[in-house]
Image (cartoon, rainbow, N blue to C red; front, top):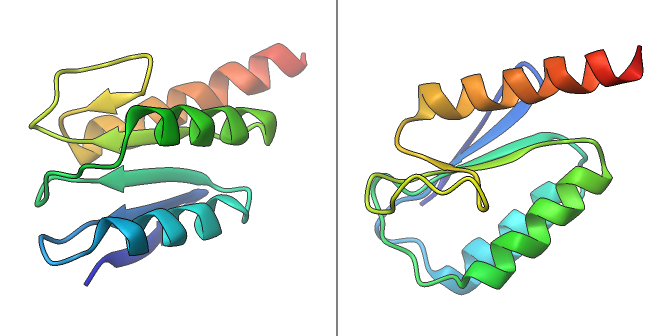
Length: 106
């Protein structure tokens, strides 16, 4: 079962091999309603959720002034979908975007 944790202003969802894509989609949509930065780690599962689902989620997060990052070693680094290979890089990615948002407010 997926593991959900919170670190600072970031919700981290670690997907397990046994998690079903339909349940993942529902839970990810639910978590995005909370207006927190969101990291989804697929390091233990290859998912079949489509690219358009993630693009829509990224747009929603940006509208809420929040970030969304996928962690996956199976996929190439993809800045359109914010895909990075490790959880540490995902946290760094979000922290950089937070700083950029603060600078843009000045």
